Image (cartoon, rainbow, N blue to C red; front, side):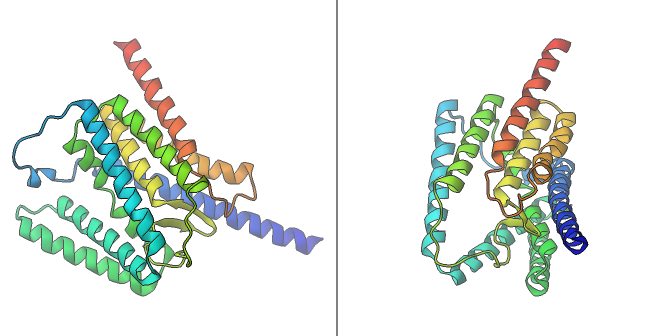
Length: 280
């Protein structure tokens, strides 16, 4: 009996620690996103004049392009082989990492930015592929996308109502992908490098959850202020940990995490809007 309790206690503590690590990792990079958001120099690519589009047209184009891109990626993953898919993963995150370094390096010359970005992205990619370490994999993937949310909000003036529609659509796609659109691949990409899954032990979050988090804290800063963004950086990671505490057998469970994040975002944005109106 004592031996069984000892084994149960060790397993329980290990899974709790992994869940805590994943939640903390998520929060840390949301804080990194808040810190870096004003340090990306997007003015380097500011050319020509802004094209004005009606809001309905802009939303329709955004949804259409997103749906087409997701569809192409989905069917490519189903139809492709493991070698192609591994190359796709590596190229996707390496190029994205390179772009992020290009925008954040404090150099006036675009050529210097390109060279430094390529060198850093390639060196870190080499370390990831050589050492095959989960923490290296996780850090490289989530770091490579830190520039995306600031760029989107820098390039387009996204209204609060449009953002709310976006996160609801994002959640719907996430739910469909997990519960309805189950992929039928003849191989598993679980052990691929840079496969888009952020793992600690048996607990994981998809890279899409991090993109959602980055977009959310960026939107919160713009709509409600940095205080809301900081609060969300903490709150968005809590459901992952609470699920482990409330449901001890949660390790290995697959569910759309956006189902927990979207209500938190809506409540936070609504609360701060009401508070702002009351002060005004």
